[in-house]
Image 1 (tube, rainbow, N blue to C red):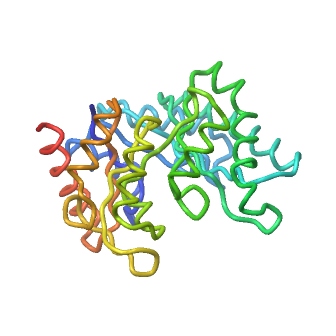
Image 2: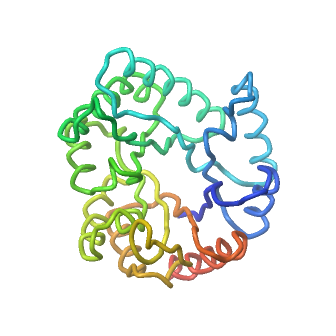
Length: 267
């Protein structure tokens, strides 16, 4: 098992500074965002991915996952093809970074795609990616994020529909609660989705939607020892990635979360 940190919520910190922070704090891995290698002002993302990979390697770190930034809530053939083609290139960037895991979005709600067809839409895009992700041995970890996939039952229905060992979950411990589910439902989702997890976000907090407040691990509403036990009992032995959205300075909050995980994963 390794402990990672997501390159998120580090305002004003350049990528190299973030990598220095990760190394100096004791993290093993980093999760990078697609904009870290394929931003609007990057003419050659392949070259940038190679550069970033070297920056990661020389600090003794590894990339646990690359966030794909995709949108699969689509039904039109042209839109699906565009997203699938884009995902193929993102997979190639992930390989250059040395990771096999893409943190994959479900997508955003759209008037043209009714809610009862969300699973169908996402599944069609994911199935379109299967030929190349299987060949490349890439794993698509669908995040319980936003308004579409932040429901464990919908995630499980999606996994059943796609039916591939290369499509599973990025399990974010707090996002189900952020969406509005009660705590018992949150812990049921964590337990039931954990067997499909390729990657995790260890996050804590209180409340939902506008009342949500991020907290250091172990200081929010979640029963974090229970969540850790359920994830590990499901056989997950990948990276436990810290995501912190609290009010303390990011480096302080992330460091305290790291210390919590280091202690509890050793038990």
